[in-house]
Amino acid sequence: MKVTDYIVEFLQRKGIHDFFGYQGTMIAHLVDSIEKNPHTKSHSSYHEQGAAFAACGYAQAGERCACAYATSGPGAANLISGIADAYFDSLPVVFLTGQLNTYEYSGIPGLRQQGFQEIDIVAMAKPVTKYAVQIREDEDIVKALNKAYHIANSGRKGPVLIDLPMNIQRGDVKNPVYDMSLEEMGLGEECGSSLDAAANGEISHCTALAADTIRQALAEAKRPVIMLGHGVSDKAVRDQLFALARQWKLPVITSVLEMSALPWDDPLNFGCIGGAYGHRYANMIANAKSDLLICLGISLCTRQIGTKVHEFAKNAKIIRVDIDQYNLQRNIHENGTGEMKFCADAAEVIRLLAESAGNAECARDFAEKSDVSAVCDFTDWLAVCTDIRTSLRAVDDATPERYPNRMIAALSDDIADTSAVAIDVGQHMVWSYQSFHNQKDQKLLFSGGHGAMGYALPAAIGAYYATGKPVACICGDGAFQMNIQELEWVKREMLPITMMVMNNHALGMIRHLQRDYFEQVYADTSEGSGFSSCSFAEVAKAYGISSTCMEADEVSNKAAGFLQDTEAPKLLEIRLEPGTFAYPKTCLGEPIHNQQPYIPKDVYDRLMDL
Image (cartoon, rainbow, N blue to C red; front, side, top):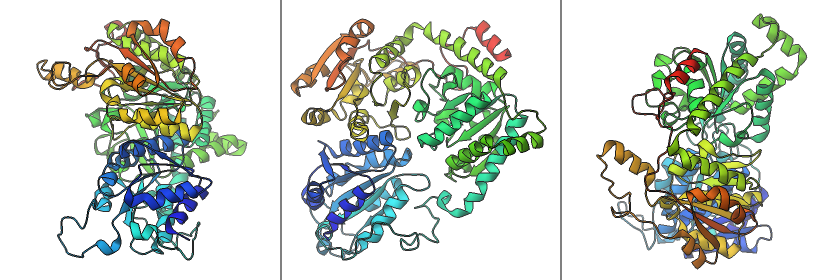
């Protein structure tokens, strides 16, 4: 069997039918194999970064493994940003790169380049992959591919890369194997960095201990909060957790990546935590009001809890369940006081909690051990949280500078029937995660840890192939120009993607920074100062895509008519003033629950006294 035929057959048996990439000499055998397999389809981008981000969007929206490919040299190098995005956001993506024929390598140490368009992509990608390898013998692909796929989808998920010299691609596999044991893959005794420590069976004993600790802590708590992160990405498991939260009347706060796990108007949804731009009510409840934080698959990085780490939730006990042992090495409280850490799969802990809660004998045993008459009921605490949420939403709604947030809310209602919405990086990202009205099972896709501008358009393309349903993307004028060439991909395939570009003719988030810290010198962020934006509606028309442009204050009245048909590609350009702001925002040195513009003192004092 031809090596590339085997690779494609292997991946399609694992459920990957869509491949994203860009054709080139050194990857042509793989693309030919994709084309000839009746169950697979190659989708060509117009820049390899677009292909990589499309694979990330596919993995996010479909909650399954994806694949992207590129030719050697510059093609492979152009994948790097997408590889990094998958690594930091725990997305299982198999990256395949073409390479020189093995017989072209000279064996001369220190030689800068072996041949045309050659680059050591394995060495470049290793810091942002779970596993990266170059294949040097035909038969080695069998073990390497089985191992790579397993590693990508095990433990803390993430990207893997296989570099394929051209002569290996056209070589032969005499014994194609599609399901290897761990021992056959050479992973039976391995628990190193390529697999995650959490994939090692030794941590399984932590699962029961974590569940017991959570149950006991809930019995003693007065104001507990569930903190949910992207480490719990399985919908069935999330549903089990939410069933428990409804039973026990527990508020749920999420990371940005996991914010669409609950519909925006769910009574238990108390927003996403954010050290700078999180929801006011999420920050106040978690940081200043709770006495117990049950943290499941959430990193609690400084982006989430602020740079003054030891100041976060000082009066709360913190229980952290995380599959990544390195995340747990960071203390939140000083010296880890009042903080319990469990290196375990949060999904397994949730399953155990759900099983015991649904078992009458376990529930009685829990009640007896905890010396309480009922398992858990935090109705009064939930009422306090609801008061905080209602009051602080009112504060934000009265802030004139937040008109983009109100615009985003209106737009989200117009695209409520889309399956996924990819959101780029910039002020519009903040407006969106603060104010988008996501519906049940409507996923919001972000470039979280990597924060890559140019993510949303190709990610939306990948999301469409994962869901088979209309999708949308929200971008800023700076971000959209990063991968604007993928408009041709949208037009070529007539993809049902609704594209919304917030055009304030500026890099708004940096401009805000320059206003506060650089004496209003707007270098390279504003019209006339090294930055400019095109007419996006006109560009879309040049690509043959239906488009229109309107002012921000026209959106609530005019946008719905243009956006109502989500079955065809369209682009809506919205013009905003250059001096836009993302509020609320934590000022440097302030506690994260006291953001600018500041809460009126009477409101703040009343809520803090609740």
